Amino acid sequence: MELIAARDDRCTMCCACIDACPVGAVNAEDGAIRVRSDVCIGCGSCVRECVHGAAAFSDGVRAVLDLLAQGDTTVIVAPGFAGAFPNTDPLRLIGALRGLGFASVWEAAAGGEMLFAHYRAELAGRAGRIGAAISSACPAVVRLIEVHRPDLVPNLVPVVSPIVATSRAARVCGQRQVVCIASCAALRMECCPGDHVQAGDCVRGVEGGP
Image (cartoon, rainbow, N blue to C red; front, side):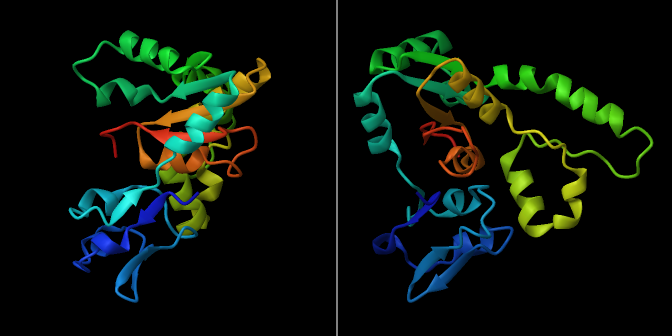
C-alpha cells in the first residue's frame, strides 16, 4: 500500500503539494498529482499543504479490521500518540484499544530502551573518527539519507528504529500479528510490510497527526 493516495477528483492543480515536497517526489501528470514512492521520504509535507484533500494518507482501517477479526492481534503505539488527544487520559486510550479487540498494547518507547546499549556501543566505537553519528530513530531522516544523500550512509547508526525494535520483540514474545499506530507519516512508511523483516503487519496513523 502506497503511503500517499492521490484523489484526482479533488485536485485543482494548485501545485501546493509540489512546492511543499523537499525532495521533488510529487509531480503533475495528466491534470493530477502523482507521488513517486521511490523518491518520497514520508515527511507528509504534501498532505499538510493540500487544503483540498487531493493528497492524503492511504487508509489502513480495513486491513486493521481484518487482522482484528482473526484475533490475537497486538498493537504498538508510537510515543507521541497521546499528543493527538491532549484532553484524554492516555490510559483511557489504551483501554479503548483493548476494547476494540487488541490482545495487548505495547508502547514503542520500549524499543528505545532496548536499543540504548547498541547506541552506546556504536558511539564508543566511533571515538576519534571524523564525521558525526546520525541517529536512525527518525525514518524520514534515514530515508532522506539512503535515497538522496548516500554519501552520509556511513554516518547513520546501524540500528533499527524503536517502533521496529518493539515490533520484533513482540513477535519474539509470541505475538502473531502486529499493528503499528504511528504518530507521523514516516513511521507509517517504515512499518509497511516488506520494508523491514518482522516489522508490523499493518500500520495506521493517529487521527489528527501528520
